[in-house]
Image 1 (spheres, rainbow, N blue to C red):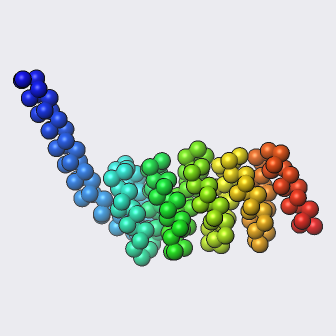
Image 2: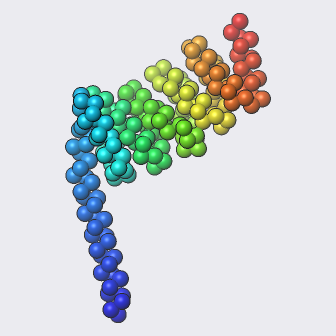
Length: 196
């Protein structure tokens, strides 16, 4: 019985500490979100570092920061922070790519771009990235992300070859050559013929 009471007491203490920790994060998060918009780059970058250390508890406030008017680089830095937090935010970034606000879409793509060094992490974004090839505000960055993803993104890169913007097609061709699958090589050859 004493052992059971001891275990229950320990659980209560742990839960209480967790709740205090969450509450203390909430108190710290709001001023840091405000600091993301600071014109002083040092203050803004320190806010990014602190928010990354807080991690998942900061995600809801970072998302809110994207829905208020941009001040300084707040939107960009909020997305950079989300990207540095990592995998749990990929669905958030994918959803933000659908936003009507071009700044938020660009921030989402930049966030994914920061993460694209780990292609497995951003692979779930391929369908939305493919749709974003039509978005003039972000499509150049999108092609770079797709290129970093590699083989799984070949169909999307092939689609990018048909862009009305020749620099998008050229960038997609660069990545397709680099990927080097037979499908990618064939698509580049056909694209080159059409450019003559």
